[in-house]
Image (cartoon, rainbow, N blue to C red; front, side, top):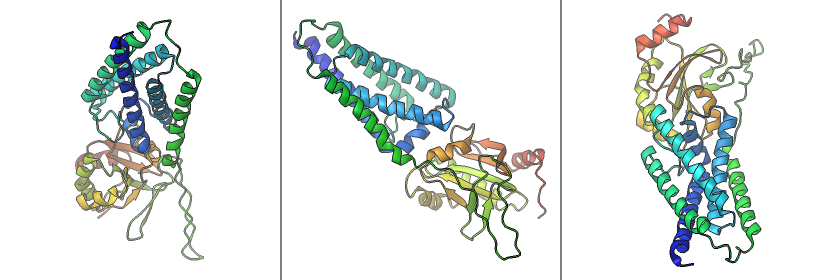
Length: 336
């Protein structure tokens, strides 16, 4: 068989495989950054389902990429799976872009790819996959010599896909917040009681730099959920500072996702927040349950005894809107 179409088809197949592997490697390099990107599609809500989707995407891209580079003999299945994956991803991207305003598809980890760019990329990969299928499957010569060691090549793809998934597990560091410790200042003091509810904020304790403790499982609080690399979160700080200094409102604290090491310090330098802040590090799976129905921060939540009473997503409420909502939900305005 001449170089066309088989030689060109083989080049196309390897090119698609390399692209899949690059995408998988970039996801694996910062798996905690990949999880919020999936969450932004607003299709998967629970942490368990989010992890399944993230690991499936990583394993599938690794497996198909290695299969295409090595040229496993079951090309009809490999190319078909690759085309189906690209079509599915494209439809999901279009949905999240048009319905939820998706800005970054997450295709290449931290390398931002806009929905139009991702759709264009997928169409090009589909074209290359079709070219590879045409030259290596559709027009294959039945009399050609079989591929050597097919099971070894397939086994290598499978093992590398499993290794990719296992390699990212240590990044997750999933942990639940522990209940606030009992505090007794003197033998006559009453120990701190445990949270009165099992709401998402029940076990969180935020401490200020002056030593004040805010046990979110007891009493009423305003809680800002912020990401330290989010422009909208930075823009919300001046409004939150105003709420912080109003003595008639519930005490305000922030629980923060810190996607990059040191990003909280940079956030503070740029925005000058005056309220206590608690960092969850880059542990997205601890942060997502606090967002509840919101797709992304910033979010302001009125919390009573650890449970959400009312919340505002995206834009912070103005003072009249906030005080009206608090009054409607039973908050008694404090005396100045």
